[in-house]
Length: 132
Image (tube, rainbow, N blue to C red; front, side, top):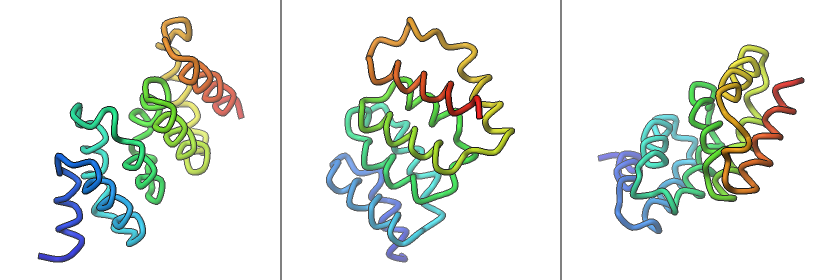
């Protein structure tokens, strides 16, 4: 088993410290095969309060195919997750088709239904970004 395979397997660990260490090392290695497992770990309901490092690790990779998830994280994640997801969008997803997709994703969201202030701010920031 390759070292990167073991790290990818560790993304499924029940222990957040093991997951986080694996995510950071995969990020440092630039292991492209880690993208899907990172996405799965981020979406795992058991990790909902411990996924900031997973989102941070995702920032090292091309995330254009995950725009919908990133927008959802901006609108629903805790501060660390929302900020990390917004940074990924802001730094790497600025092509016109993606900005159009952001507008479409936000068109079905009502800011008034967002419960947490940083998610409302994220919504506003995404609106501004999509106007470029």
